Image 1 (cartoon, helix red, strand yellow):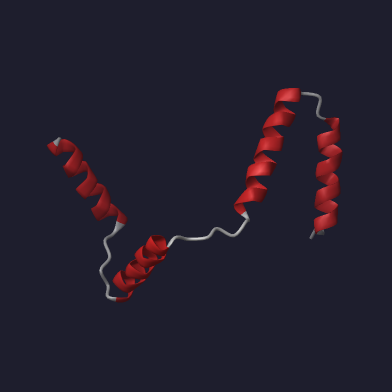
Image 2: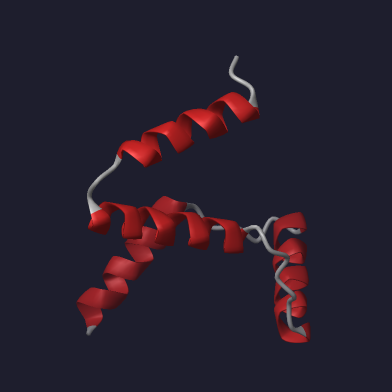
Amino acid sequence: MATVDNVRYGLIDKILSIKNKDFLIALDKLITSSSSESEIVELTDEQRIMLEMSEQDIKNGKLISQESMNKRNLEWLDAM
């Protein structure tokens, strides 16, 4: 299995060979957005409350399947 350094150096070699400016700009945006996603996100009190309520719903079995939710959404859309 490749080490992190091997993967990193392989990527650097590949990036150095790219001549397409637009591609490099897009790659830069991808890498930048990817690294910002790993930052810790602070939740508001309201968000914490909603997550706690969701946890309670899961513990109490108040769940709906994706299939049922899709059906409910389609019915709602047809009613409009």
